[in-house]
Image (cartoon, rainbow, N blue to C red; front, side, top):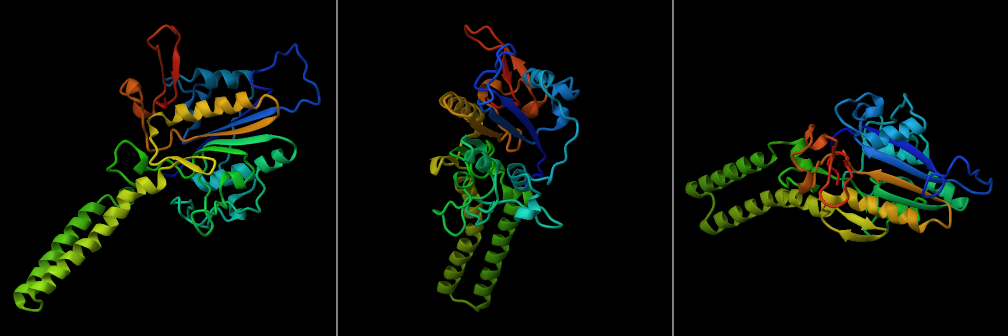
Length: 333
């Protein structure tokens, strides 16, 4: 898994739209919170921090109207512990989400590990004072304790009223290039090694047959057993895409494997609907985008038009009657 640096933008809004300065807010009105987390977005990737080749006018506008921070320390250079620190406000090693001297993350959806239930999240704290809470996007802090149905580390068990997104992360297996996987990222010659092992094993069994150490029936049995033995790791590797690339709504799996091509657009629509449905009560929305974390992807409409490839951000004039410019965030939509 690629080492991940997480950039965080905190936006405080009073309702769905920003209130006018001429309209004073009553003290009894609780503010709404929208927190945006973007995987692998570096400080130097946005215009308000000096980038002059990638245009980010919306983020630049937010920075101009609000507060731009220039110092930030990430508690860990990886997805799981960084998120644990962000959601609890504590060093991840205190919750067992960081191991001394090595990186630690939740590697598979079926892993019996995750954020302990006795940790207090900001969602739980705000829920206790009357807030409606939602997480839309990437979780990656565990799901199960002992079996596939307990969901003890699920976002709904950590203070969130609503969850729509990826319980794990967008692994290489989830991308457009299905030949790439977590396994081949760690061992690029994985399939070559399997192939040579098959050749050597079959050759050895054939020599045993010729020397008379095994009979014809034993030879066939050993060949079949060898192919089954070497096929298992390939089957498991190919199965990672189905096992881990999952999109959920609350406890229900709504897509497996997930289609990444338009997932950012779907996450954004879910967030918009949540905000529109929460006008009668204060809310906190944790918007956890999976991009620009690998696996990279882009919609067909926007492929090949960015100055920075799949990692780039551009402005493109859409076709149709809108007549406005549409912002493409790193080929997300």
